[in-house]
Image 1 (cartoon, rainbow, N blue to C red):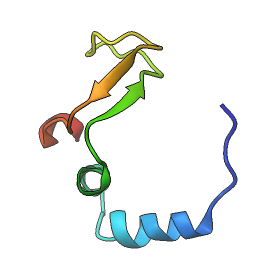
Image 2 (spheres, rainbow, N blue to C red; image 1 turned 180 degrees about the horizontal axis):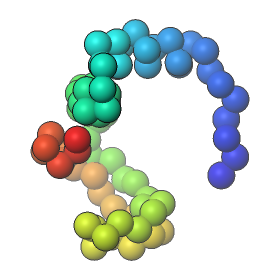
Image 3 (cartoon, one colour; image 1 turned 60 degrees about the vertical axis):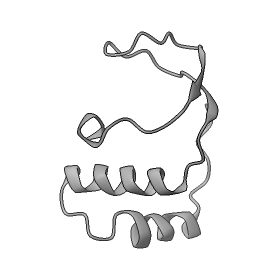
Image 4 (cartoon, rainbow, N blue to C red; image 1 turned 90 degrees about the vertical axis):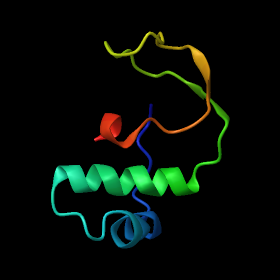
Length: 75
């Protein structure tokens, strides 16, 4: 997959809205968690791009996403 050019407006939004008060990796993760929880519209269709040991979903599989995992699973 090709890497997109840096979008300064996007980077500013990330800094000022998503991770503005984050001081460690856990706070960064939770900033993203709450941002995505507030902005994503469920349900939607997604394609698995990488296999994980903790997931039965195979790479390339299409799934229906119905919500966010609990906070403690996303840290």
